[in-house]
Length: 212
Image 1 (cartoon, rainbow, N blue to C red):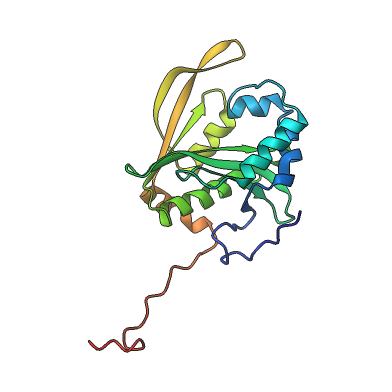
Image 2: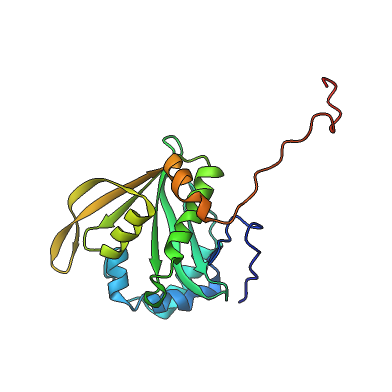
């Protein structure tokens, strides 16, 4: 299924290289193919039991029909040719504190092209500028050097280490906690996205304001 892309600046979900769109029912073959790479699964979470094509089809069909709940959402990253290159999702959203987290995964052949950084920028801009969140935090497994490098280059600050909080390949691993505030994002990353204009303030005289 084709999903025509808006020009940069016309949609808050359109970046310079990629666009974020919802998951559609006919996307299930992508997820089934990605599930075959156990190393990608391990970097994202754990190596799961094998999942049949029919189970994936049903799961994606259900997911595509669900509305966002507590600001949890999953997007597909698609390039200028409408080719899916990865996925990013938000979770652990706390409106009272104004904090949230996200997870992402890229197809192995699409890594190193800046897609992940742009997807993070698009999601952070939306959560900070449209939903009013003030802090994002991310958990990264200590063995995932690519993810550590990505977040450190992006400007995330390493805020702590949870010792022995992951288990894979026969041993326990630490989990690193990275964070970024709304102000840090605005200072370091927002300018790397296409501009998305704020609403204009109406001119009081033009609106016939009786106080003028």
